[in-house]
Image 1 (cartoon, rainbow, N blue to C red):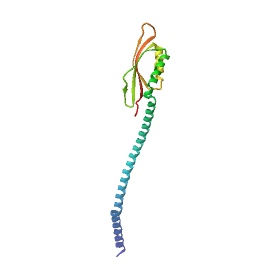
Image 2 (image 1 turned 30 degrees about the vertical axis):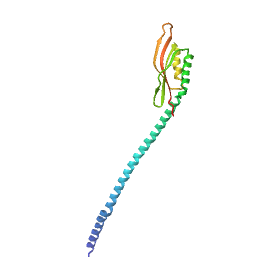
Image 3 (image 1 turned 90 degrees about the horizontal axis):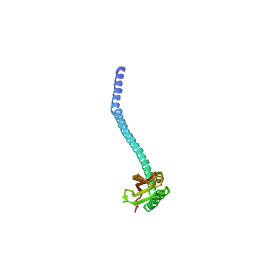
Image 4 (image 1 turned 45 degrees about the horizontal axis):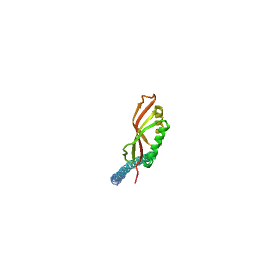
Length: 178
């Protein structure tokens, strides 16, 4: 065998070894690597979704805590049913302190709502308009949730500056549990 033929055979064998090595080693390894990269990408996408879900859960937890604090705040402003007479007494004392004369105070049908009860009271007061305005401001300062509705104010013709007011004040209190 001559040197040139030997080199050509050796070159053909090396070239064949490269082709066989590529077909049976490198190509399957590249396919396995691509499959592994695809699985890693899928898992990274799922981790990203989990992180978003975890962040949303934390936000919801914070919102739930804020709502629980708000509920506790409003419940603290709702007297128990047994203290409804005290609230009525406070409203009456404020009216008398401001110089208003109560004509009538009548309880109306109570309304049961989910979590609280509303007790409307029909009140009629007479007196000076400024005193009535002060009464409204003082009532607003009470540490209880109350609502004044159906307010009708009429001027007394016999005395300048004096009014007659008719309104419904709703006092809210806690529903008795048990």
